[in-house]
Amino acid sequence: MQAQRKPLAERVAIVTGAASGIGRAIAQQFGCCGASVACIDIHSKAAEETAQHIREYGAKALAISCDISDPEMVKNAVDATVQQFGQLHILVNNAGISPLCAFDQITLEEWNRVIAINLTGAFLMCQAALPYLRRAGVCGRIINIGSLAGQTGGIAVGAHYSASKAGLMVLGKQLAKTLAPYGVTVNNIAPATTDTPLTQAWPKATLQALCKQIPLGRLGKPEDIAEVAVFLASDSASFITGATINVNGGLFID
Ligand SMILES: NC(=O)c1ccc[n+]([C@@H]2O[C@H](COP(=O)([O-])OP(=O)(O)OC[C@H]3O[C@@H](n4cnc5c(N)ncnc54)[C@H](O)[C@@H]3O)[C@@H](O)[C@H]2O)c1
Image (cartoon, rainbow, N blue to C red; front, side, top):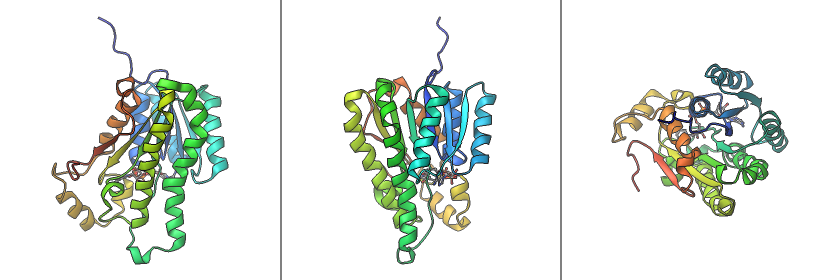
């Protein structure tokens, strides 16, 4: 019998927002599955903690301090990854912010900030990674962490957040078509409310009300999202592109 090969062995991945929550879980799960991981985040100390966990599993990891809304920092982060690991196969656009705000309270400044991080940041990452992903060919992957709010409009979250996530997910669909001739796949994961530092900062009553609406009866866990990201990044998903995988406990069934 042949020993089981790790599904992401010899793959190099970038995970944005890897210092916390879903991004940290994805980066760590990628490391467990054999990938070398660049942990990109605006919070460098916590990104380094994620990288350290990954190294403890025996995988390679690098923490990079980067604000993904800054084009120069993004380019430097992608270049640093390739310099360190020699190649790039997988980009996970996970970093995001989600201010809770009523529509009539959203200032133009706050609107622009949410779009700059959640949508423009992913655009900048994709553009900077593109030459390497094309070179990666059938091993090339983009995985966007969208949101149920970007599919149906949000309940608790702000309209700027929902609009940014809808934009991110349709960017993924367009890039799926653009990159298919190279063998590169592009997919979205759409979580519903997931138990992370982002949602732990929300009022308890809001979280309880959201939880009650989830048919499977619990909030998502970062690991629920990470398992799907590993699958989409692996060879097992090489014929899936332009898809949105709902990880929402049945809250939205399309
Ligand atoms: N938690 C949920 O309920 C939920 C639901 C649907 C979608 N999502 C999405 O999943 C992703 C991760 O969310 P989370 O819940 O783990 O949040 P989180 O706040 O725990 O983690 C987000 C990470 O992104 C980083 N980040 C923020 N702005 C950045 C910037 N400009 N440059 C680089 N890094 C930056 C933060 O420092 C943080 O480490 C987000 O895109 C979020 O919108 C979360």
